[in-house]
Image (tube, rainbow, N blue to C red; front, side, top):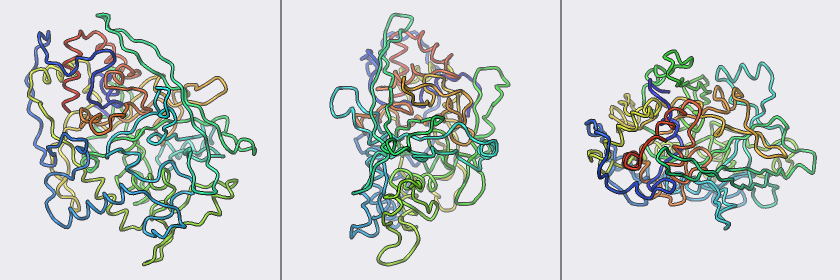
Amino acid sequence: MKTNSIILGLALFNLFSCSGSGGNDNSNNQQNNGSTTSPTPTPVIAQDSTRVNNTTSNSFSSHVANLTDVEKIRQFNIGDDFFENPWVEKTSSTELRDGLGPLFNNNACQNCHIRDGRGHAPGDTGSASENDFSTILFKAAKSDISEQQRTDMMVGRLANVGDTNVGGQLQQRSIFNIQNEVNLAVSYTYHNITFEDGFSVELRKPEWQFESTYASSGYDFNSDTIFSARVTQPMIGLGLLALIDEDIIRSQQDIADSDNNGISGKANTVWDAVNQQTKLGRFGWKAGQPSVRQQAAAAFNNDMGLTTEIFLQEGCISHQVDCLNSPNGNGDSMSDYPYEVATSVLDNIEFYASHLAVPQRRNPNAQSVQAGEQLFNNAGCNACHVKSYTTVEHVDFPQLANQAIEPFTDLLLHDMGDDLADFSHTSIGNQTAPKQTAIEFQATAHEWRTPPLWGLGLVKTVNPNASFLHDGRARNILEAVLWHGGEAESAKNMVLRFNQVQREQLLEFLNDL
């Protein structure tokens, strides 16, 4: 996933977003006065005719600026309607939007992707927010699997093997009269990390607690199950990421770290259920999905219990009898088809998700912002957070083709260290999973896809409660940076040598994205 330099920044940004200051530093929005860094002039952001000028709380909800065809805008708006409004259980008269569950995490796409933006971890304020699991979910994968299953994962034929008793994803909600799968809770522990100049930042670490509602019936979690926390990610720019040349992404790999810079970068090869072949994984925290369409269909299926032409099976397991016997929402009053989300609806959702625009940067040529970018590069963050690409041709989505984009990602997997790894849940708490445990195709328990950084500075504007990193532990950008480990350890350590002015410049740059 990257190019050459250091890592740190890469992963860092994996996780963050945001607008505000970091830790106890309230000055990241202040002007730089007396920077010790000499900014290196960099080109103004590339020509990208899809970006929109919107800095409001709806800045992630606009269609790309160059979409002018009335019928295409209408399709975007139809997709928006299905994205925003809740789905209902089969017994409702709303047949084009029925079939929710029986087990699910949320009942509408927008309820997880707040205003098309990032989600958040449950709070730590002692209020009801401690039980807010509306925008985070947990994957579950067995680690004690057969050699054939392991081989299938390594070649992209099998994502993983889900827990025998709860499946591949924990679903804490269910429709009326159906037993949910799990009760969730979290607590946090706190510690400080200190810069060389004495500036200190408090970090919080989540301790996830799971209780299987089937445990008393003899169907508790498998003892070898590894859990993976996933906060929802922003929706902007997905169609552009889909059009980055696959050869360029794969060329950035350095799996064996042949240049000895400490950064490897690995593409995930996954199963393309639409075309029945393996393909580069681009989407999701582990790069486990190959396309926007399949990512949307997987979310319908796993998050809302809705079937599509791509995924025809509900998530019920053999001992979940009430789930198995629950009526489905297949077809509608106009047509009969063996799944719940009509293909026309999936088409519109795919179009909508592909054409959500990235906001323009606000002040990319400011001296302090450019100084921050130079610090970002000096720390090696650009090794994973690769700045720019030009998208390839696309017949169906011509507005997204041939765009010079700046997503700041290599779309590759990187080892982010023990602290951010997936975990097993035991009586003594969450235990870090072994480093090489495969979790999703070739992605291991320690590996995460470098997240794009575009839109980072507006994340808190869109969702003031948004939090960063895959499990939302970071409450602001600086905390996210300071959780970086593994391949990003050296980059983090370089950031820890920054003085106050440099911290402010780095955050000004990130908040401008």
